[in-house]
Every structure is written in C-alpha cells, then in structure tokens.
Image: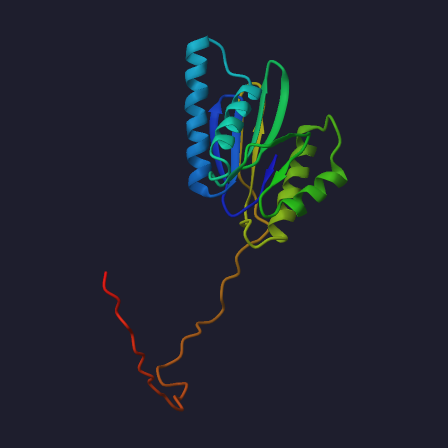
Length: 202
C-alpha cells in the first residue's frame, strides 16, 4: 500500500494488521486509535483475533456516521485466516478493495507506477522496489508528500516497519545568508489615511 500526502500516520491494530491515513492528522490518529481499541476489545471478548473485513467495516460505519466531518482517508492492510486484504476508505465511508492502492496528494503519480509494473505473486524484494518507486514518484510529483520513503511489510507473523528506506529528495543546504542591513532599501514616500469607524451598540 502507498500513502502520499501532507500527513501520514501508522497505527498498529494487531500483530498482522496496519492502518495508515492522510488528511487531517488528528482525525486520522484518533480514528485509528479508537479502532485499535475496538479490535482489542473484540479479541478479548471472542477469544480470537478480529478479521480485517470486520475492522474495515467498523471503520466504514464510523466514517459514514460522521458524514465526512472526519477529514481522513485510510488504507487498511492485513493478513488473516481469509488471506491478504487491502482496503481504501474515504471520509464519507465508501471503500475500495484492490490489489494495490494509493491515496493522498501524491496518489496520481504513485498509482501510475503501480499500473505500469504491478503483477500478481511478486517476490518480496521486487514488491518493495515497486512500492519504493511508487512513493518516490509521489514525492517528486507533489510538494506536500514529504521527502522520505517508509515501508511497512505485513505478514502472518508480524508487521515490519522499514523507516528511512530511501530518501529521494534530500534538502539542499543554503550556501549563503540573505540578510540586509536596515536602511538598505530607501523609503521614497509615505502617507497615512485615517479611517472612520462607526461603533454599533451591542
């Protein structure tokens, strides 16, 4: 899964499930924290881990209940007894289930890389290279998508976060200091225009 945008939050719900969000950072963080708590309570009540589809449905119902006022778009990925799952959820509660997903301000550039090079049953290293190139395309095509590539590999055993996997956009160090002494630019003229303000009684 690829998430490009001004904000990116990863919250671990279970050992085999992860969720990332773009949009309003506080909404994404609180939504995923609440769902992580609900998934834990479900696991304690039933004695078995929750399914990815169940977590996704609860997220959809929550987003639909707020009618888009939670400004967050989410990608949910995980592995359970039914196999591998990847969902994208939108602020109004609609969703997609696809083999590859991209959301956020850099999504158009990232999904073009997926559509060109994705194929089923890829090897892990080949898939990591594809995701790295897709995120890089999102970063270079959009000023709001940051500068680092972080990967998240989800398997049945655990979730592996690869922070700082690549840095395609390295910040440039400024060579000089652009400070000028006061008075460098001469003031040619100035004028003051008084404004009349009528104060209304409360």
